[in-house]
Image (cartoon, rainbow, N blue to C red; front, side, top):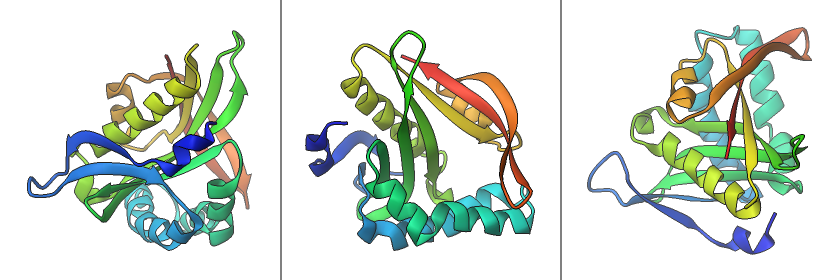
Length: 192
């Protein structure tokens, strides 16, 4: 990954949901942003999975993915990226992805780990803009083409969003994550 990128802010042309607000912006997260990410996750992750996961699995996954140690590793580790989207100076969502080797034909393969918009910014094109941000960035890093893969819970209503933006369902699986819990996911892909 190019280190020169990390000092830039990427600003998209899309407007925030409220017409008097400035454009969405997306910037790399730092360890100082961990409380902001945790605050958003408390709302968006719980809102997304309230009717899908048991309370025990919800608590386990919140700790597994959003503890300070887990977020620090995701933010600081080579080959991983975590970004926060803002509407003006208000945190509105987050996206993270990581390098995941090469495809059989030698293109870069990346795994989209998280793409969440707070409820008030859903249906405002923020999700699409965060996805386009990742796609544009990966295309710059891999001009010869690449593949994005994404696990999404089979009961998550965002399945329709991923299909709408051009991803296709490749396979499905039940993946053990510890403590007897599983992620029951579809794996979506996009080649570009």
